[in-house]
Image 1 (cartoon, rainbow, N blue to C red):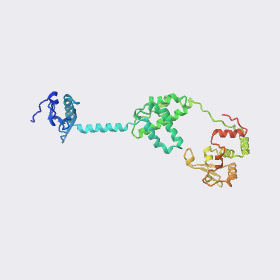
Image 2 (image 1 turned 45 degrees about the vertical axis):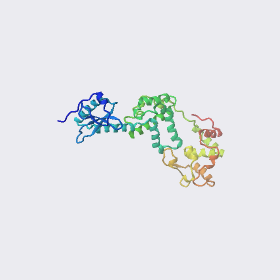
Image 3 (image 1 turned 60 degrees about the vertical axis):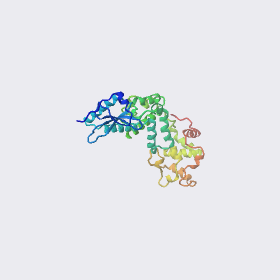
Length: 341
């Protein structure tokens, strides 16, 4: 039977200063390692399966003799139960590193989600607005929070102050918070339901946006007056008037009209094909051209620029229909200044 080491006292351990390994006693295999540098640490020499590794139990004197013996007993008990303490410690360290790697603030997640969604944005302005609204309303409250820890109460703290006063902005902020947290979930930075989701969640905590803010329609011309309006519009004989007439005849958006090119127009087929990249839905749009629109186009066909240039290039340097205000000025010039809402 192997000889047991004498059980040293705390004072005796303190006096061990020469480099070497010293059996401490009290627990089989417990030793104090003294290095050439003078550093001292606790070692447990014990058989683990088919190996006999040195298991570190901490440095002396930070780890006292009493604590070292307690740790040694606990380690031996784990081994007796079939647990490899070295493998268990490494697994715990790996789990900690993984958990730390998963820690991501909302602001960082928003920036990464924004980058992932960048191909979806219609233009640079839309891309900038997406982040700007989050920075203004969400970042002060949840920006530094880990995405994993964000809950319904935090989302409500962001939305409640602006839900009734800036309803449209608030709905966009909610949608963007939901998008960021969804990105975080699929990328492994959070789990569980999305606290910014509307259906089955925020719909029970906030009133419907349409109930909060009454929709205010843009002013519109009484359709009974459309005939006289079009007659007066054609009499103005300006590029802006012709552009507005073309817009009305094709039910197009002002941007589509302003940026239309001759190579999109097929006079023989009586068709205007708006390319997908210029459409809000990103799908090619085919617009049948009525006879009045064809007359307007043929009138300009002899003076048309090369195919790659804008159909109504000339109007770009004059009054345009780029804004509702300029369109209203045109309406006013026709004598139909009063439009109903």
